[in-house]
Length: 420
Image 1 (tube, rainbow, N blue to C red):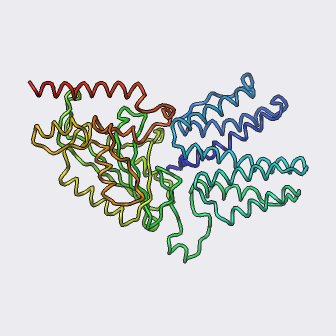
Image 2 (image 1 turned 90 degrees about the vertical axis):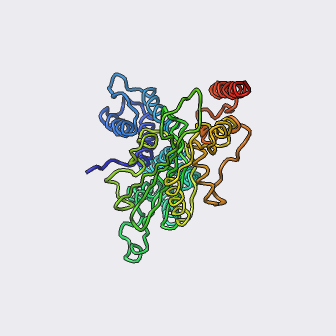
Image 3 (image 1 turned 45 degrees about the vertical axis):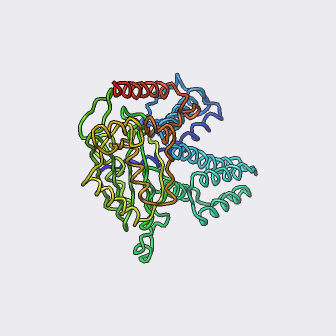
């Protein structure tokens, strides 16, 4: 049976463990038992490895504040570059939470009144709100009470239980109530967070749809739809995309036969973590998300009825798929090749996904308007922009200029040949 922790929990705990190592640095390392530092470092290292980051072993010879800082920075940078913005925020929230709880330990040890716990608590609550996580009024009041009591040197409260409850609430591991009443069980009180965007909470009547691409894959421009929902305690997911039936000549792109693919999976229970995350279940090439993948996405909450309508629309497209063209349906070259072959304009993966989402007619599903750049071709990366390249304007990047020049050359050559 697989008991691996979900990515959210790993990242939150990495933030926790980074603080533990940081607090070791505040005291002369040579005056601390090495085995204690090593044990805490190994807990950090193990979680990093499960996330996909390899850290060196710790020995007494290399132990130093600089060494510990470098490993913490390596993990933080990996999360910032290879995970979503919400995962980066979750790491910082885990860091803030442990800072708060560590400050309580400090107060209980030195027994000197200080406002440090209050400062850390305010940061913790702010970060949870920035992430879009509602920790609940009751839990927030309890955190404030324990903070005030510790600042007044009343040190008899159970910190460990509230620490666990906070983690479960933030990571969406399960309902905060350990023993729900029969009425709560009947109404399906267990909630589910989106696996694509954990800031989105899915209910029986409100599902999540995402437009996704994997920027670090060889097929980094490929766009696909992920639909997530739940019914009672059962969690469901659908993957859908649009591809060409046969390989085509990239030098002379033309209109080809297209194919709509869709795959679905479900779990026995929303809180069932033993069978792995549904996001990693898809086996179809270019939609086979792995735990090590970095996702770029836009996610929207839609009504369950709209989600079911989306499934029906995609199934209808499977029965009679549109033509495929690598540049999308708005490209002048796609239009020219379509007219010359008496075929309708072809879609690419991105323009097909946009068409499906626009046909929902949901005012909250905001999609990019077709601009001048689609005259050449529609590219997913101009909408789902890689944050590593955020400092650059897409139209000034060397890769875009190269592609633009290449495609413009194709268009010019096409019309010159056509006039001969």
